[in-house]
Length: 155
Image (cartoon, rainbow, N blue to C red; front, side, top):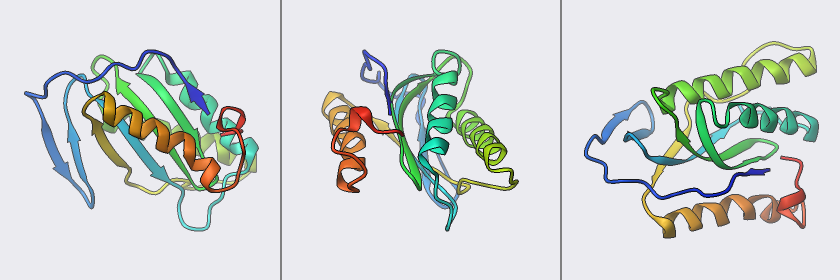
């Protein structure tokens, strides 16, 4: 788990864009997003592999995005982040999932996809919404009985 301080709310969304593959994706410049992405069916990340993914998320923080919180579970991950500069959410997710899959595969001595193609993303609209998403993110390993303290959870 990783939490950075001072996650501000988003500004108005005059440039809101809505696209769709299987899931709807709303984007707006300056928006903060709550993102969930899942492992492909049958793939489970070990605690060491979860730490690899967390470290990769940390490595991109402050460069490609501002990450306010992240929790990597055995079969999925949650992020609260805001893209930086010209980096789009789509590009960020492509890099996060692609490079972290490569690193996990390297540690396993395998090749192939780790993550499902599409991610669930939602624009965080206000402080109440942000707090709700943070609570969900922190409660996730507690609900799954993976830890009794999310601050000390491996992911």
